[in-house]
Length: 468
Image: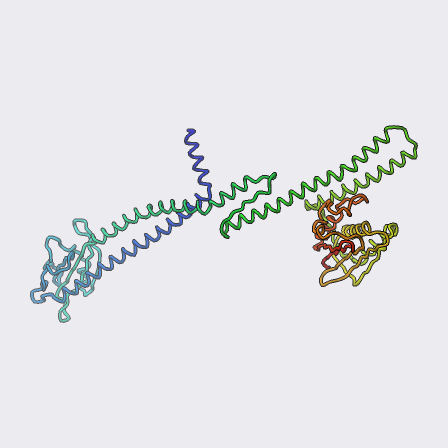
């Protein structure tokens, strides 16, 4: 019982294979085609052979009438002159049998045909002899001088036709299953050859885990469907690899960013608990702790924003906004900070520009860019915020005269916690997430953000947003 179960399971698992299913469909379709073709061939040959039999009877009847001895009412050339396999018989006009070409093999009597022939009609029917054989019988009137003088019957057994058709049927009965068997073997071979690369791709893909996404299928096949499938998998693995790397880097950076203020908080608390202090000293320590917790709260808030954005859970409200008014509000809000740092903050608003967007998020984007410019522009420098329309876009530009960014760092500045440029450190309270959030906000509004910078000459951020 267990052995039968294993066999059934093997058959079931094998039947679920695409290779086997493709072969089965191919064999079934081929079988239907072969059966239809065989039936058509059999019927065509059946009709052709019977038509040829009928034509031979008509031709023989015409020849016998043409050579008939009307005076003695007998076959003119004798019965031996009949075509091989054909027998004939003569009847007088009253239907009485007169002469047979071969008394040992008489023509089956067809009374109705004799009656019609007496009336001048020719008939061609199939009749059965007393021995059980089927004959094709042609009955035709014999007319001389416009007067009916008798009836001629010529007949031929269809045994040759039947034998030919039986031989064809036997040949088809052997050829069709053999053809299907060979087609099954060939189909399995060809399906295996065609699906073999997919098996290799499957095994290679199964060996790639989340811990090692650097491996690739590297299928060096032709540019067919399988080759394109492998290339698609490789591109997908590239995207996954980059995403996992960003995630691991993001987690490591976030842990580092949070660990530093937590360590400082723990150290300050330990120092505060070592000995009694004056109220003024405790107040100073609490103020320092509040600054650190404020930095941590900002960092956690920005981390939460990016996490929700990555998960598609950060919803935006859309309303028509006048970007000129938004620029004025942001510049007014940042003016005290610019004055404190000795930086000139100016605005330049051209034509009115209205967009569909989230006012809170767009304000956050512009605040991040202006704050970034003020943070890295030395005293005596300037930050200019401009608004212009270009085609179907509104273009916001924040131009500073700060230290600038080296060209090798420009492609990475929108990455989270990017630290390659020593000039852009976190000592002044930055979290390293402002530009990443700004890029997400721009893209969430159907726009994009670009940066241009020359080391030592300042930086320009440009935000392109579609107009309402």
